[in-house]
Image (cartoon, rainbow, N blue to C red):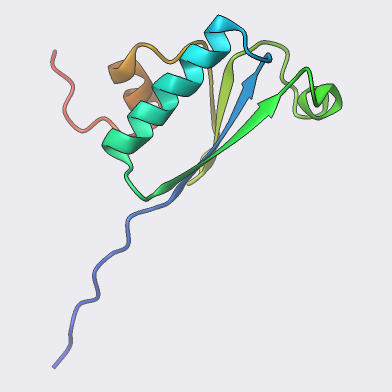
Length: 102
């Protein structure tokens, strides 16, 4: 008798590049946090990189605008620039949208 193991949902790892406490950066973090709590509860990590504090890291990672979100996992990596205020568009870009109204 074989038993099927439940398929584990993928864990998402995000890196959000922000510019200090700039309004757009704060908005992007708030929007990402809300999106993750709603659509990825317990299945996400968010690493915030302040380009003012770590300019070398941002340059090494090829980040030239903020706010910039990088989805590191699951593959493939994806990059979204902006405040992430268009929730459906962000979900679609991240591969999380299941039903998009036409």
